[in-house]
Structures are given as C-alpha cells and as structure tokens.
Length: 199
Image (cartoon, rainbow, N blue to C red; front, side):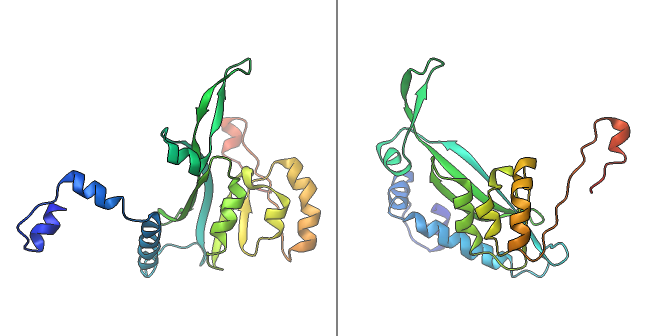
C-alpha cells in the first residue's frame, strides 16, 4: 500500500491498522466480482489447454473449521461436539467449501463457501449453470445422486458406487440420448498393473 502511495506522489503513509479498517468496508462481493473478471481475462488467452476441444473441470467439496465468533456462528451455524458416549462438550462452526477446478490449466474457475450443513450437490448446481457447453465436468462418488445426474445438460463423468449405477442406469438411458458406462479394473498386483484396462 505504501508503494502505491509513493507512486501517486503523496507525502503521507498508510498504517497497517488504517488499511485493515478500510478493508473491512469492502463487501465480500467485490472479491467475487474481481475474481470473475480475472478468470474472464485469463480465458481470453489463445494458449488455453483443452482436451479434444473441452475444458476439463473437476468438482470437489471440503469442510472447513471456522474461528469462534458470534457473526460466524450466525452466518454458518454450529455443530455440536460430543464424546464417545454422546455427551455434548460444546459447539463449533464450520463451512462447506466447493471448488470447480480446471485441471489442465491449474486454475479455480468458480468456488462457493456455504454453511457447514450445505449439500455438495446443491453447491455444484449453483456453479454449473454459469459454465460453458464445451466443458466436461468430473465428479467423485459424493455427487452420485439420480436427480443431479438426470438433470445434467452438460457432458459429465461421475464415479458411482456400483449399487447406484445399477439403480440409475436404466433411468438415465431413458432420459439422456447417449450414456456410456465404464468400469475401471484396478490391478491387484504388480503384474496386472501393466495390463490394467477399461471395459
């Protein structure tokens, strides 16, 4: 900040505490808008990596423990802490963080920070609507819910537990024009690892 003031030819400095106070006046949405603008500028570059014309976007969520604070409790809620016999020992706040990551270009395209009780799939839906038609989306098994998969308007790959795949496959084939199922065969020893295959 002081370097900025020097560039402006002003003969005063800004203290760290004054900067911190001023920063608190900024709405958090300002950072979201700045981030979206930076991402937009980044993708104007002609050297963006794609796989067969598709941007490869991976989704994942995580729980984050937050500091103890009255405003944080109000915004994100609380979760009880209990011991092995169920006795409540207190409460803490946590958030659910969701990121949509461009795996070929190493950049987070979108992210959401929600309440600790937020459902990853619902957060993903809020991100997906703003993505392009030439994006290939990748999800782990936590997103394997029929309503989520059936309503997808974009190409996606999702890791499904076998039981979910069996229950949903017929329904998906009826709803989606083209569905391909792949079973990954994991090698059980070093000899088989050389001949790992996809069916």
